[in-house]
Image (tube, rainbow, N blue to C red):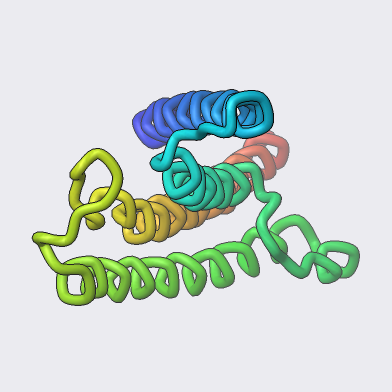
Length: 175
């Protein structure tokens, strides 16, 4: 469990850093574009497409972060009616389903990346378009991984707390 938490924290730090860097670059680039266009009737041709790609990257990384924090779309009205144990069971089922869907979307996105975008198609700075769209399968893979981590966490809590409760009851009932 400690290994999973370390990996999750390292991924979170990397994702947050990338989000901060990209948002900063996007803000600076947007400001610079406005100033250059209004004052000098000049702008960078590559800036607008680059910002579109960066929005996509920030969106996917933000979705991964939201999944980690439990802020993704969810219906948790059952939490009011279920016991803590049953809430963990429901979360295990829901997160397992979500992980499966995310991994299937990752697979489809990977197939699109390989088959739908030609290897020789380039865009800004003569980088392959696959580079810019790689966030789609990477994002879905990271979301699926995060849901898998959530399943492991909830299973661990369910098993450890259940075991701790049983052991506690046994020790209290001993003469």
